Amino acid sequence: MSSNDDKIVQAERHFGVRFPADYRHFLATEGSMSQFVLPADDFLMINAIAELIEVNEAGEFQKRFPGSVVIGGDGSREMLTYDFRQTPPPLVLLDVSAQDWSSAIHQAMSLSALLEQFPETGWIWDEPESSPS
Image (cartoon, rainbow, N blue to C red; front, side, top):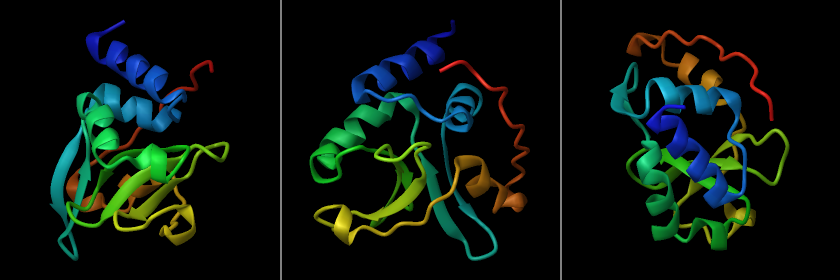
């Protein structure tokens, strides 16, 4: 098991969840990303595994949004978040100023579906093999 795989397992234990296979694959192969994506020059950031716990604790996201794990965002108010209240957990956008789930912005999709929306970034997304739960 690589050092990155160990960090993924540690983060999963910290949050008490099992990350979706496509997100685990992204963390193991790419690790993170932070760039503007065309055509609208939207900013997309996906945090490195080493930043997950700190980012989530700083925003008190589990307190405000039980079952959430923030994995990135737009560098401003919207946080890219897994909603582990559901199985499988959808990837949603949360407004950082929201007080709880009732005022959150939801746009459910998988990480691979999100990355496929930005073909001009050069991402070639290979679906990960199914891993045992």
